[in-house]
Image (cartoon, rainbow, N blue to C red; front, side, top):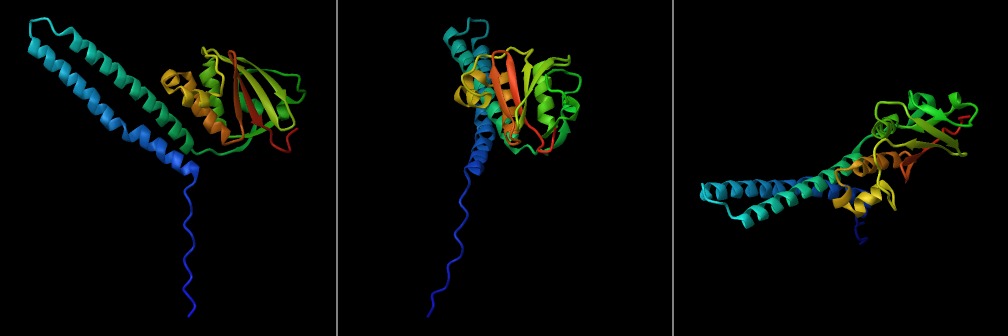
Length: 220
């Protein structure tokens, strides 16, 4: 008798799916015990003050509770950063041809490229505009533009103070979460992750952010 055929082997979980699950678990599931710790510390503080009444409270107890409060606030800040990255990974994007002039709006473009009006990039405009708003605020900036065969390169001066980094914003955040969570590096890391899915690259050099945008193949 011919033995029955086994069913197809199950599909292995992809690293991307496992990473998404881990980010979601860490950023959301750990908030409940963190909130419990925070509320418990406040209840202990109130109990100590009520028990002390008019007497002087125990200084060491206050110091310990203050340290616990700082610790829980730091944890909350880092969990929020991980939640930001998790949302960036899940955020939908729609890549489409966009005239570069339209994308840059009222910003002043400095370039030797002769036919800037015909230059079209293949991107989702939303995270790029969010990046420009983050770095430039509401006022127009002077943005330098250069061109390669495959990309337009924008050098965007930042009005927000940027730290010196030895890595990209995303890697810097992942490598030093206590240092960069809740800062502009967290925002840049989120945008970098969204832009990377569109073959865009972010570089930081001093106070300038260099953004590489893929040119539509049939663009001038």
